[in-house]
Image (tube, rainbow, N blue to C red; front, side, top):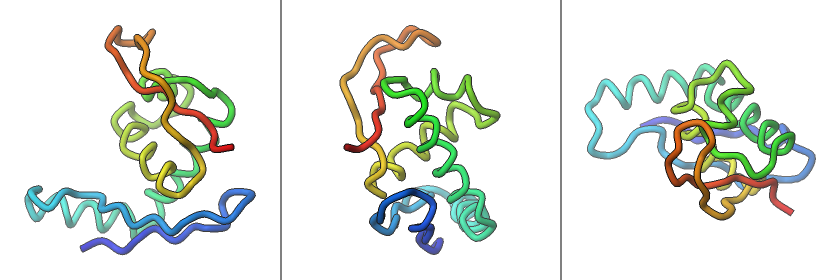
Length: 112
């Protein structure tokens, strides 16, 4: 199983330790290996920081809208948003129609 992300000093206030698994229990072993490598390399923590910074710069956007402003894929952005929430840096907002894909989607906001 992958190690938890420990990057409490990224943001300007203390964060809870992120222990969200990067792969589901039902995922194949290859997904767990990839998740472990992604976490161990530091890319997962770096991408959480990128996504938190995006939300702070562009509050109220959906994952697809946020992805337009970074080189991360929409899927990577969408996976890191809940981890930023677990860390206490961002929060879910209201759902609204996404301007990128036209579906009902969650908005994201900086934590107060």
